[in-house]
Amino acid sequence: MKDAEILAHFDGRGTAEFSLSGLEAGQSDMITAIGFEFGYDLKQAEAVSRSTMRMIFVRTDSPTARQRAWQTHDRLRAGGPLLATWTVPGTAPGAVGSVTAVDMASKRRGLAAYEANGIRGFVVFIAVLSLGCFILAWVLRDSPNTPLAVMAAVLGIAVAVAAALTPRWMKQWYEKNRRLVDLYDRQRSGQVGPPPPPGPAGPHPGSGSGQ
Image (tube, rainbow, N blue to C red; front, side):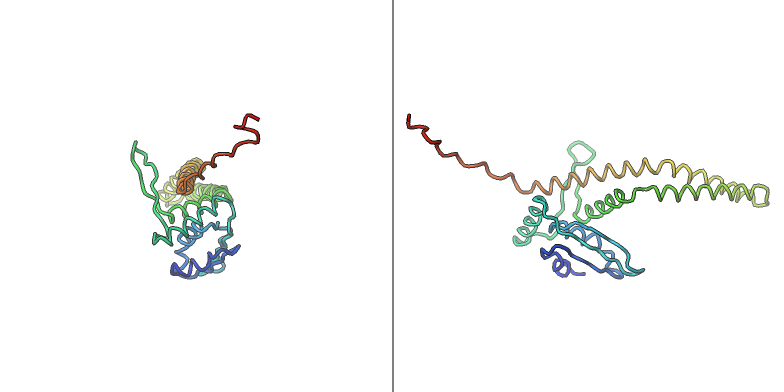
């Protein structure tokens, strides 16, 4: 889809729906990033068929989302890019890195999937796979295929270790990307300065007159 087609969906209505087929499915992160810039959050993404994906976005009316949408409109009217690149602190002192809105959209979708589904199903799957390797090794232990049994046992051990460590790895991945997304959002919201201070208050009744 071209940018103009994507923008036509995010026209201020309460919801925006996309039906992506074939190579268009590869634009899902781009569409999510554009929707975010215009104040829309991804509500649902599902595979309708083997070749078709449906995405539903909902407009967010929070002050932060509305401010972000206004900033985006202002940037486009000024001839700026549709999606900007932002800088984030690097691991080394004083170092900075660049991150794109599409990168953030991908991370945001991953975080949402983790928060919604966790990794219990995946851990159970690899635990069952490990058990299957051990069963295969036990069945082949007295057969002429001893090397195959050894390989199955080694694979079972490796998969079991992965099953034990995956929750920790995923938690570290989640915390790292959660911090990065939060930092991006704070930077994104900080593009507009604070509101001006209130003007000087008028004189109170009776003040300055000695009465």
